[in-house]
Image (cartoon, rainbow, N blue to C red; front, side, top):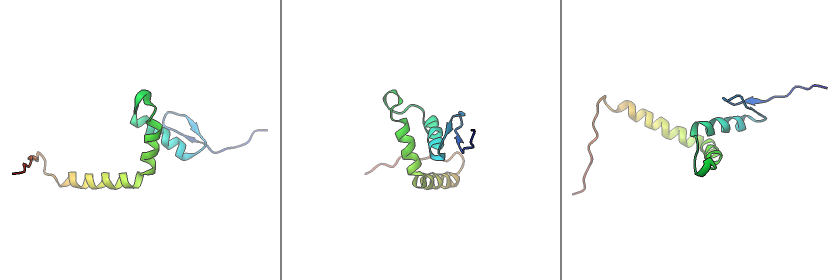
Length: 81
């Protein structure tokens, strides 16, 4: 007999039993091949997912600072005397 189930589709169309699994596949696809033969990609995707709040905070801070830099702003290298 047929039964209904809930599945999550990643951006490439693959079905996954869990939302996190589908999200990790999408993250891995964005990251591309990491490490020899791409063997680290899934682990890096999981790390990004697990550290999401910290990463989002850092990127938000970056975006706020980028908005503060005037267009055509120059950065000068500081030298220690």
